[in-house]
Amino acid sequence: MRAGWGPPPAAGGAGDGWAARVATEGPPAATDTTGSQTGTRPMTVGTAASRRPGRRARLIVKRVDPWSTLKFSFVYGLAGMIVLIVAVVVLYAIVDAMGVISSVRAFLDDVTDNGNGPGVTAWLGFGRVLGVTIVVGLVNVVLFTAFATLTAFIYNVCTDLVGGVEITLAERNSDR
Image (tube, rainbow, N blue to C red; front, top):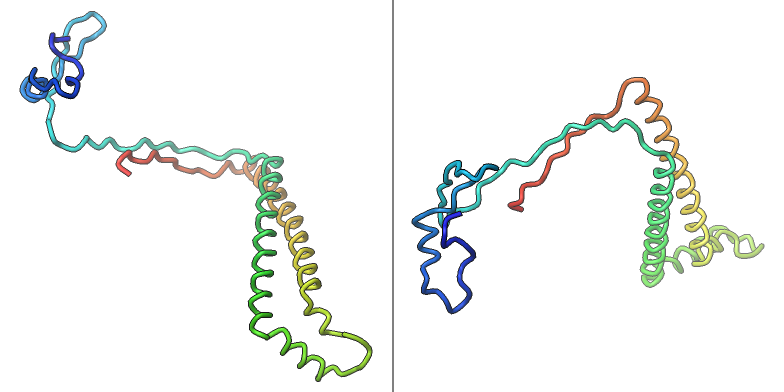
């Protein structure tokens, strides 16, 4: 390396002309393993960094692990069930606050007037609606998990017959 090259001076020591040397002389020459200089690279001050295109790789998905698919789909199904329960609770609260539930109950009482008990209106209670929501959510979790795991098995059989799915992965540019 040429003498005088190094990091810029610390704050307050701007009198040695480091920036001026970089602008006029350029960076030090690259050296090979024998120690001889191979040439110098010109340095451009004040321009944007050069763009290097991202790397690309074409890969084939040969196998999907059924056990990891089962675990992932189970957790994903549970998250969906929680979203369903929260949505039903919020919507029931809004509809009940607007008086729609009591209007529907009154209408159903007038239509079904059988005198044998609560009848159809019992299905409109919050406890019953929440119970049905939980049952539907649990059935959804079981079916979704089973379907995703079965799909992983079927995918593995198909890849044995015809190969896998080819995907292209690309590296993001560092500009973003």
